[in-house]
Amino acid sequence: MNYRDYLQKLIYIVINPIIKGMISIGLTPNIVTTLGFVGNLVATGCFIWAAWLFKTEAYDAHRFYSLIGWGGFVILFAGLFDMMDGRLARMGNMSSTFGALWDSTLDRYSELFTLFGISMVFIETGEFWLGVVTFLALIGSIMVSYVRARAEGLDIECKVGLMQRPERVVVTAVMAIVSGLTANMAWLAGGMILIAVLANITAFWRIAHCYKELKGK
Image (cartoon, rainbow, N blue to C red):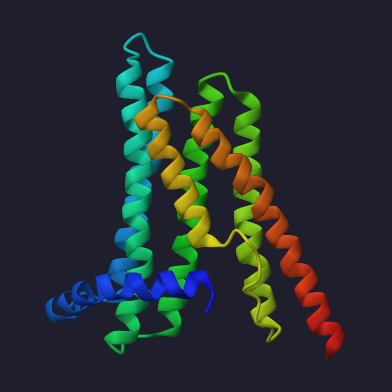
């Protein structure tokens, strides 16, 4: 059992009672997926608000960093919905092909929006190159998911790599929270650099994996 499976089992122990409550009140996986997406939109709003605040005469450092920290906290909270929707679908026997499509689509939108918001923070605070790095992190994040989707269309299981979606969500959220608490954007910058490097490596790692699988066939 790898570390992701072990952590997943621990989290399921915590969220299973919540899932049962959702089933009892009639919540569907698609509603939970949508709520998670809305949470990521709120996080994006926090980042954009912080970027806008930096350029105004009403700029207040405490408020600026509070918005960054809250953005990270909301991303982490929304990530729980991303885990719960799949668990709800399985436990409530509500799995559907459209549900899988809806989940994957909103996952991509969530990453696009949140990383865009972070990129705006760096650009508006004069850190142009960190804005570029964040955009590279966004590209890597999307390509990791794209390669997996394309591979599965070719009947290849493709879950290899170091920076999959759960890891990206945790790194983004935790680094934003720490930056907010310490009033130091270096933490968030480090998180974006880490994702930009490892996500793009993961994308090419998956391409290499698919090449080997197809060559074997």
